[in-house]
Length: 176
Image (cartoon, rainbow, N blue to C red; front, side):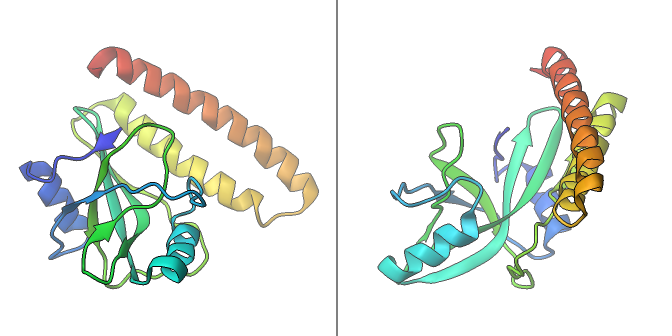
């Protein structure tokens, strides 16, 4: 996945479906030593103490060209001078993200599933999206159930991860 090209009409249209009236922007990544991967809300709250500014909640927009487009619940920092910066490191080198602000979104301490849409009609893409949604549901369930149920859900998660990897590999071979 890569940051979606905010100048492409299908990306702009997707952003409008996620947050009507939103205008996608590129937000540069800035490395800070205490930032944690996959923990944008912690990163922004921590940075606010040192840098000031305000948390901006919205969605980062990702695209797997010819396969799918995805909105990920995310937060960036608006510095006192008005510039936006992304402070959350990822496992791949990334200099900027595509982002839309969502004035109605709030961090309520709960995980929010990504919003995904296929970029073409393909049963494997639709299967991958369904598997990703089910994986989110299962990992959320694991956090709130008793130990016996956790073991069963952990096995289901392992199976889902395997199925997701198989579908991704199939799509990678087909679409790059």
